[in-house]
Amino acid sequence: MKSAYKSISVLLILYTLVWGLLNAVPRLDILNETIRNVYYHVPVWFAMLFMMALSLIQSLRQLQTGSLLHDAKAANAAVVGLFFSIPGLLTGSLWAKFTWGTWWTFQDPKLNGVAISILIYLAYFILRLSVDDEQKRARISAVYNVFAFVMMNVFIMILPRLTDSLHPGNGGNPAFGKYDLDDNMRLVFYPAVIGWVLFSYWMYEIKNRLTFLQHKLYEN
Amino acid sequence: MLLSLIKKEFQLEFRQKSSLAGVLVYVIGTIFVSAMCFKAKVDKPTWNALFWVITLFTSVNICGKSFLKESGGQALFNYLHYSPLHFIFAKVLFNMILMLVLSLVTFFFYAFFIRNEVENMSLFLLVLILASTGLGGVLSLMSAISAKASAGFGIMSILSFPVLMPLILVIIRLSKMAVDGIEWAGVSGQLLLILGALNLLTLALSFLLFPYLWRD
Image (cartoon, rainbow over the protein chains, first blue to last red):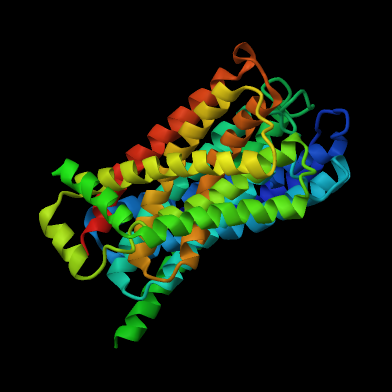
């Protein structure tokens, strides 16, 4: 069945929403019960990165084939990915208020990385809006997308490893690291990641269908 | 072919004296305004940040113009006569050299009008060189994109600032070390390595991606 992944994603998300609140978690300093945010905050960022990677692949295929189809798909994936940064920021901000005592800080490289990634993709959309010719827009925005994705990854993958982060698991903060994400938590965390990634793919498919329908409508 | 392209870049720049002189006045003006605003009361971190902000804005202004000349008939001529790799290579090289000269000039006037806070000068110069090449590399491709988009000058800064952030952060951290006078033994080799690697990465991406912008 082609759409089985949709039901799987909904079931996994429902399961993690409920069981994430009920199961036992390790008691750690500062974190306490807020460690459950791992189930809701981290998977959303996985979904965002997954969408951005998909957008990159579509942009590369656009450059390869020159088809407008891949251009539309790349833009749709970026829209969905950018959308996922909203729940990611909200859950993270709320959690930070109760553990760090502030909604936002510029001291943390991961927060800065997210802010820059959002700026990069907003710039991508502005670039798309500013070119009228479809073929030209497809090519130019694909080039920018490829460049931007690499720079974003330098920012969020390499630079945070150079400095201490306030995030759990970095700089000696207690966290689910390799030693204390216990099996209990894995039972919720991994399904949550898979569930949200599949869900983001579903959103992307719906967005694609919408684009194609609009395209057909305008053609006739 | 390549040499003639590079020569053309320099000849064009020197023939249009207004643009080169304009840049110089822009740099001096910005530094003078900063000196007036801060009234020379800057501590080391501020000195460092202000210098790189000025350099960043200057570089976006300068490199943003580098593809504007190539439009219409000129673009067609280029397309028929040159290979895209030669073309982008000439542009990148020219921008890098221009940025290097400009950042040195900026540093000179900055030290003159405000103060010279650098204690490890050799490290600072190395950072200045790597920063100029990095900025020149990234901004050449961004300039090509914004020239193709033909949406005015604003798009150049919108596209460049976010993608320049990784580069700028590494540069600022290294330059802070030079300003604080950390000896070579204490300098983070890892950061220098990353700055060099970022340079190579942006160059490789520019060469890979430019041919797609080329055909219209």
